[in-house]
Image (cartoon, rainbow over all chains, first blue to last red; front, top):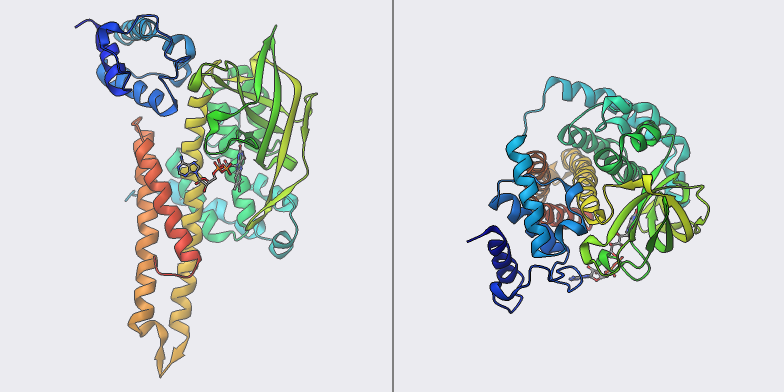
Length: 86
Length: 336
Ligand SMILES: Cc1cc2nc3c(=O)[nH]c(=O)nc-3n(C[C@H](O)[C@H](O)[C@H](O)COP(=O)(O)OP(=O)(O)OC[C@H]3O[C@@H](n4cnc5c(N)ncnc54)[C@H](O)[C@@H]3O)c2cc1C
């Protein structure tokens, strides 16, 4: 499964979106639609850290990195590269 | 339990020499809802406010655990609970937020005064219509060139009546939920920022609170802590420190009461023996001791886990409830 699909599956299962992962659009606004509340944000960050062996800096937890499944995927892609280089 | 180093012990003993001065004139501060200005001068001189901050900015470069170790002793020795509350609020609300999330320029400009205590700090999260539901806040921050314009009202601002620096949390993107809040460092004299009258907190007379009003208050972008939208994460970090530091002071306070109970149970006699020899009294003292050690264990273990970079959301909530229930039960004179 591609990374973006794994992220979608996590979002759908964890936050009970009532839709199939494949039907969740890459650009569905998770913030505006209230999918991610304060607790969900913290659990999502820790899930990403465990799943992709990342140490996410709180300063990177900003709207543009978490607005959609695609932006989360892009953020993880960049973070994975940095983690490998660093 | 943690084995404290000789350095930790020496540091604790050195700073605790000041605690008698912190406690001076306590009856007065138990009567008037006023910030204890004179004891605060001793607080500044003692160096306690410098504990967890980098030496570069005038701090003592100590860990969270060592900071808590000294704060526990503060609770045991200083009976001015309002002053103790003011100390932890100042350290965590402003110092910890600034050290972790401020830019180097912002730290250079303000952290030395926070370490010294010459600038008193606080934070403004709560509003008249949103407390526990912090994300329900309505204070807004609207981008305007190199500034943000803040408008709204805050409530229950600890240290507020005397604060020189306030970390204000405001909404930068109304529809972005938990990523729609940003933390700003705002100086007291910023035009558009006004403070309400002091309000006394129950049991904390010497830690008066106040309201705060922001009327189109312009704050430079450079005063943002973290990034735009990262306010919840700033708050999460600060709240973790706040609970650990504030509640460890509380366990020091329990320790003082326990010591007094033990002493009294030994001194007071009835039916030809000290009352501590009666099982009903001894049991209550043992329960106090168990409660105290449970609180300490939860707080220090959570601090160790947090320092190791692990997630402590559930541990912190448990530690807070355990310590809180024990303090409340013992405070009401019942066995824990
Ligand atoms: C001494 C003191 C100092 C303070 N200092 C500061 C400060 O410096 N800066 C700042 O911003 N704020 C400060 N506060 C405010 C504090 O953060 C709020 O009081 C707190 O967030 C609770 O909000 P509230 O008082 O509006 O109560 P509410 O949130 O309105 O709660 C009312 C009642 O409802 C219960 N409740 C709420 N939500 C739930 C839920 N989900 N489940 C079950 N029960 C619930 C609560 O337990 C409580 O009993 C301070 C408060 C005190 C007492």
